Length: 351
Image (cartoon, rainbow, N blue to C red):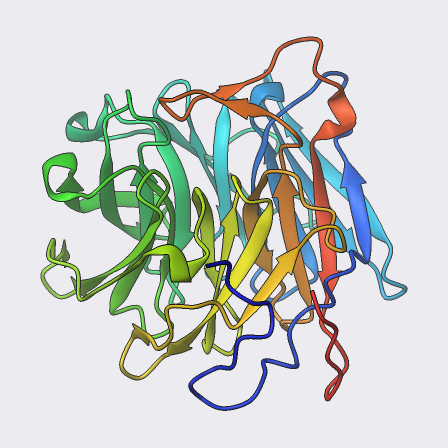
């Protein structure tokens, strides 16, 4: 059974104030060749976002001006940036740093905001993953609401080591400390997306090969992730098909998940007090032909909740091991970042 785009929420009524399924704008890959655009993340206080152009070894920073125009304000690139396959980038809690996880060499590079409002072209810190994580490849990453903790989902493909890790982050001193790891023996599949609950007492993780979302309790005083999930959401009713990124709405009432195999984005009602997904079926779906989605991947929500940004790989093929297939013949503009705007209150557009 295929979930309906107009499924009723257990909280009552439709999620009418979701995003218009018709894209408001799109940013085509500006690099000279095709590049995976793995992640996108908004600044916590400004209409500015960064995106990782992984195979071009760049991080681009964009700003949305008062007229709604998206402009490139900065590109962090090598050799100064010391980027090696930037997989995911996030802003620190105060927005004064960008933290990038690098796929190729298992490092985190950190860039500090300068007096002119731009970010340092050289990293202020280049941190190796701890020895226990040296053989892991990062995928999803999220900063906690307080900015004191960071979480990374390691895996991305069947042949990679898999894990879910928690770190503490000292923004002032750019110090990162590894606190806890759930290793692959305790995980059901390949972790891809990861996000904190609004009260940062839980981690929510997508598992792409088993089409599942799992919620894990955190003990932040002990600095640990409890390996037994408090909730598992799976099955055909969920509409999950190779789920990638997962993000919380700004109000904390809904989860937004990109599904690369189905070319759609699904939304689930979330109880931020009980820290539970209250309905396995999506309450809203962004899907084609209206939404123009091809292999949706990274997700970001603006600080005021008015804008949803989604990165896309385009019509790529994947192997049985979940590896992504492309080469120099792949059209560079096939990858993009698509922007959606919040619907007007009271409106409802079928997706």
